[in-house]
Image (cartoon, rainbow, N blue to C red; front, side, top):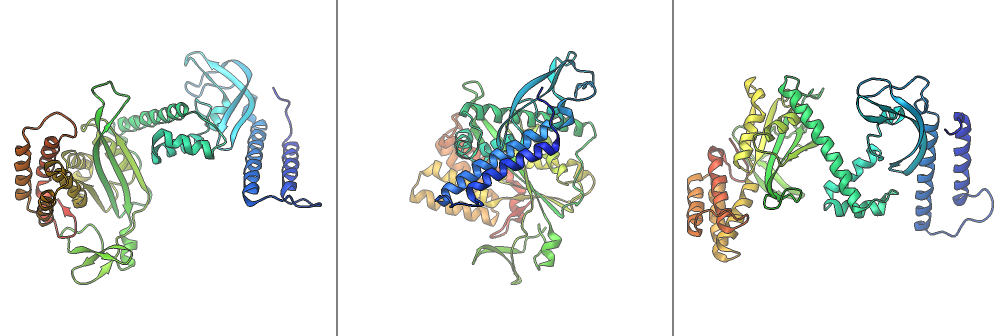
Length: 437
């Protein structure tokens, strides 16, 4: 084990290293180096990462859990660890790799090895810090998958990973998230729902969507599956009211959209113009699991965000069967308490389904454009019977619904089923707005 060093001695060492690095940029005597701004940025970044790693390693060196005075215990079963010994290790952080020694022992009942320091610092089972893994997973999600994340990390991170490592670590974090979410679902079903926020939202919005994706981890021939996602966010209506905005959603919409100077504006039919209240923090839940299980995942996240405490809850979707089923099942507890729940048809999204149907039936032609314009008019006017009849006529013209994903007839039959399921949502559709079920 590395010889123990006092905190003051480590502080002195780091201070001296920092001052030597600072001399490169601001020497007390002599001439300044003829560096460009790019060179200075690169050197400062490199030196700051080195200093950050020095601080981390020094902090670990003086941590009492590095060599615990008492015999450490297993974090899982609380039994004493066996075979305690000093072990050198390295961890990857957002500042780069750090190296240190710490006590390490084995738990026979759990058949696993643990380090008190690793447990206290929450390093997890791998060699990567939580912040590093969070960045890795964030890039994998927000960019073009694992290749995009690998490209960004290669350029910006001091830790160099292969594409396969990016994939492996992302999958490991994802599996851990799914495991923890499943545990929360079991607890919710057992009567222990997640605790809602201290400040209940005025309006909680749950936007639902689903589409087909190919999952290459599935067996060949069974790779197409439906990816279902929910976005949950809150809107503070009281703040909007203080600013002169109206409250949403309205039971009987009395507004329409028009193009404004900086985007679309809602206009009250009485002449008052106002902007939509801005959504606050968004959270997500998504899965390729069955439609029977997905409402539980939505319910879990919605309750965590305050569905039971909110003044109003609004589900938004394109009208597909699973959307309304999810909205109904996820909000059963709230409805049972007599609280308000809105189901709002996303007409813009529904119009996209009509555009897909028009392209499948007619291709990119003038006839297709005219047919689409007629159907969009029926959509905006809430003429459900005419719309579904037109879709059924084109679907029958193309023949029975085949099994091939993406075929023209399948698209038409799917569209017909979708707009049939919308049903009463059309009854309150208003020009330029959304329909409330």
